[in-house]
Amino acid sequence: MSNNIESLRDTITPKSDQLNADDLIAGPITVKILAVKRGNTTEQPIDLAIDGDRQPYKPCKSMRRVMIAAWGDDGREWVGRSMKLYCDPTVKFGGVKVGGIRISHMSGLDSKLSVMLTTTRSKRSEYTVEPLQAPVPMPPKVKKAAAAIQQPPNPAKIATVSGDPAESDLSGIGPDRPADDEVKSKVVQAFSKIGFTLPMLESEYGKPATEWMESDIPELRAVLVSLKQSAANAKAVAADMNGDGGEL
Image 1 (cartoon, helix red, strand yellow):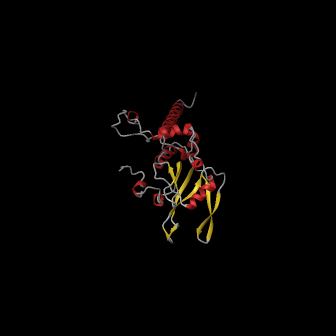
Image 2 (cartoon, rainbow, N blue to C red):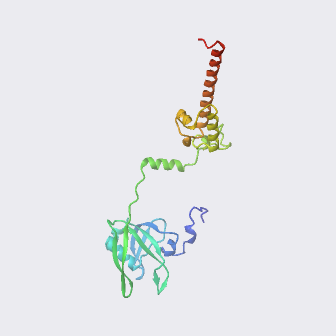
Image 3 (spheres, rainbow, N blue to C red):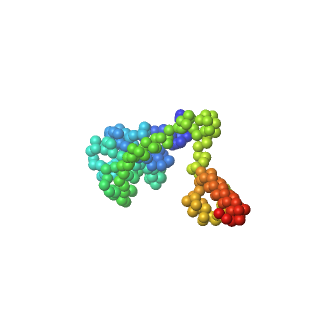
């Protein structure tokens, strides 16, 4: 028995020689027909080998009528076709709801198909099947990127201080995260002490405070130091000028 818990569908698979409605309780499945052969009984005269390592699908008379209406009566033409199967809990047998397999989508259809099926001895109703769209192939670039994401990280390239994978992983810390609001507030207050309002600061730095990232904080500190130094130099020059009587 598999230890994989990503899908527990296999734990509810009934023991049988065919695909059953109970197999689809977890949800519909899309299958491809691999082979068609005659069955051994008059009740189930057709066996369809399907992909996915599943038991053969033995369609009921109603679904056989749908398949013939969609694909014709030559079973050889069914091989390679696909369809979506689901469990219909309203299907009755002997007047009791037991559930049954129904087809919702089929490949090879240009538009939806409607077939009149007998539901009881004296009643017929319309049954509709939708076209099964072929999967869109993944662009090579996207496929390559997806494969790269699924690959486990290279231990030698983990973002640590020394490159030693035994150290804590530092990836995700730093420039790719928005700056903390408290930190931004302290920066704004520091600039206000030298006469810079928030609009002036945003204009000087070239980025609104709402877009500041963690990597911006050291740069803002450097700007603050530079402005303070410029102010200090200007003050020193003014003092010198005042000491000389203001003469040049």
